[in-house]
Length: 496
Image (cartoon, rainbow, N blue to C red; front, side):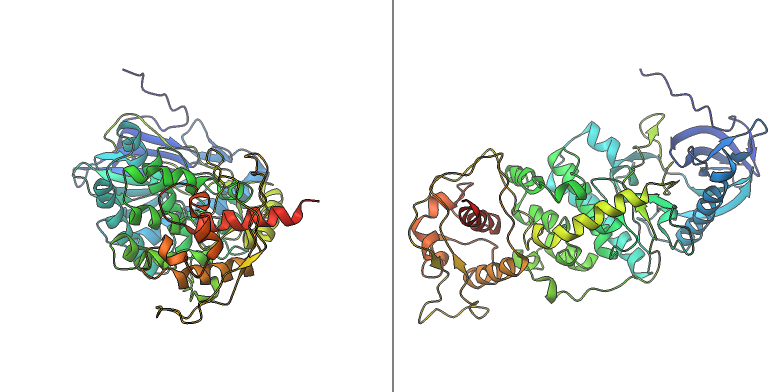
């Protein structure tokens, strides 16, 4: 049995905080401690969260919290205000799937948040114990969490730090959304050096800077990453690295044997890099999971999106430094320490520059389907090189749900196969949109793929070379495979 960790910054056990006696330490993180307390008045257990950002403050001999130096004092107090605001925000909610805050108080130069104590484990712990659960099990966790998240969004707030350690599973199986990030609330006049931590892999691209367009779609990206982690057994790659090389959807596609296509498509939709391409609300995303929306719902043009706005909790500055997954003293206890964003220094400028560079690329990196990724292990067979062709509209086409798109030129790729290490050029966004319009027009049954019958007459080159274009050999053409064909054609043009 592993030895219980020692927490040197913790208050002594059996000590009193007002009417609460501290019995044990549930967990610790970069932002403070979470204790198991006993309410001597009501005679029940509670969880007590203490604001103690380790990089900014230390505990003095008398138990009080003091900033490490005068430079960090302002940052510490700014974070303390956010912590208190988090408590006030959470106290507004009474929802079975949102952590319940009963009170907060100030003592020892810091603040404390008193919450209901629940027995159970985080999803992070659950997935380590039982990786890659069944789809039904995941839906039983996801759907209630979506209900709670929708209530948060309807109240005008965002979570901004959804990750496996912030989804708690009670002993009765009911999930709970915990650790709302207080430093991700409205930052007001905080100086440029003040930054809030994001969690790489779960934080969307727009959360890396104050200029990012954040909204419900930002939390949806993070929750999609949580489900991705559960389905694949791998942490999702961070959004910035996906700008250069994105194999996340290829990894997700490999899970087809265990999970339904609709389930995987919903994850893919939520993980779109471009926030305009994601579901714009929890209700919209839930509809795809539950079969109330067609699989082609995620394949849409950004211009068609009417995006709601969340008026509260917009941050001012963020970095990519991530809080480590909080540690628990044992299975079955509520681990909520470290839930609010720690204020860190002097990192914003570097990542702001990287984000701006990424933004210049995002218009061409992101596609209506996030499956548009290179797959190094599987390469298409060399294709013949007839003259350049166009996507043709038949003279008398059969009735379609939508009018046929304008002709989009598609030239065949070179006969020399692309090497796995050679990056393919990106397709301009306007061309992607035209290709997707043509794709949707040809997709008569609306399943998000093109069958041999559907490409015949509209994509004659693909019809003639269907086996070579069908990279994954599933008998149908996906948007990703269409992008690959177009990229290879672009490569042919660029070679001397």
